[in-house]
Amino acid sequence: MPIIRVEMFQGRSLEQKRALVKTLTEETARITGCNTEAVYVVIDDIHKENWGAGGILCTDKVHH
Image (cartoon, rainbow, N blue to C red):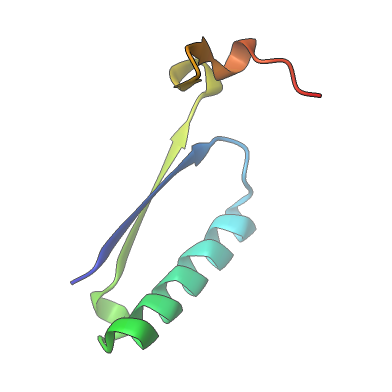
């Protein structure tokens, strides 16, 4: 029973999440030879204020 955990910033639409779950499930089942029903995908939407990189909260980063 493969379990795929995806952590990403909040903001993706329900349709984007559906497409991600579908693709990850189908490809995992194809590669591992298991049934799609055995593949679980967990999506964690993370606030940028709860994620840091390079010693800086992502809410504090300036994008170029």
